[in-house]
Image (cartoon, rainbow, N blue to C red; front, side):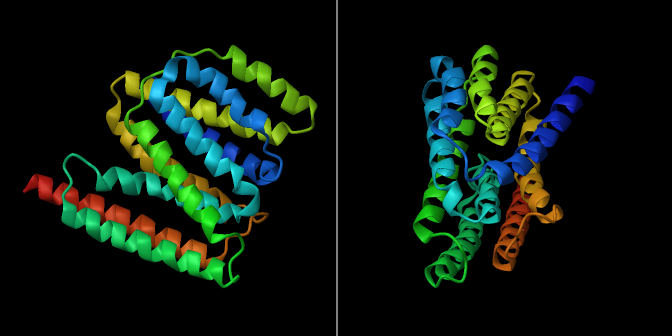
Length: 243
């Protein structure tokens, strides 16, 4: 139990550090930053690893052109998708949840189209697709044996090139993956499910709390409504299951 708690807390701390570093590395992410997890995951990860890397690559490729708060807020799609496609779910709850999410995203896209919110609507849609790839990879994940040599070795060029925040972001991502798959291998599915909610929430909350980061009001409102709707949907599923 203590080891499980340590893994969960470590994943939360790595999320906070990673998002904080992302604010510094947002405009300096390189191809090498994606190559680091690629060389670690691809030899063993199969299709799930490919989907994960596609998602991370697509998400990161347009990150420099998007408001950071908007990009991070889209990670709340992970619990939304989990609830919507839960084995104990039903189509009515899923339809209600997706209606709220689509309405919120449509509002953000409209604001970007009117240039009242930074970034571009096409990039936002691409990041939504990227989050779907990441969710699919997590849903069908096949644990990868730890081989920490490649990530640490390839992080050195980023560090020597003055891109320490970018290296830190990638290493934090790998650390979170290791923690989650270790919990999965130990059959701690309750923890994995909870962290599916907690980590995206912590990531966005980090931006809200740190004064250096700007969180536009429309993004904050949309994120709160999506979070509340997903929480309500999970509550309804629990009620249906208990009756």
